Image (cartoon, rainbow, N blue to C red; front, top):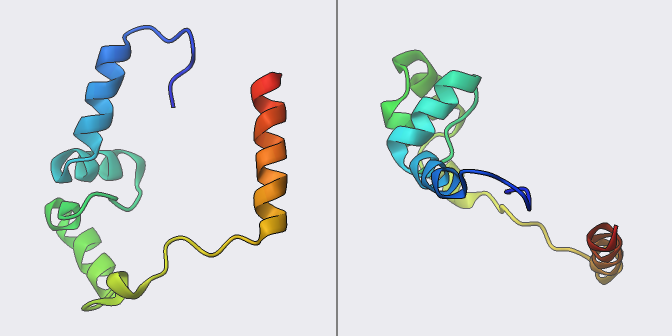
Length: 89
């Protein structure tokens, strides 16, 4: 997300592209002690972190995760109302 009056917008977009790469994701994960989010980044992580991650998510476990739970119509309605109020503020 960028603020409306952000400076260096081009650099921000380049940063976003970089952290979406395996190398950038691995570097960001190391800097913030987090899990890398780009495909292939775990293979570039520290050996201890990589081994822990692979033990936590063996074989095809990540492929079986459901990333986006279903949203009830009441939730979607409330979320839309909140978004409208936020944008109007």
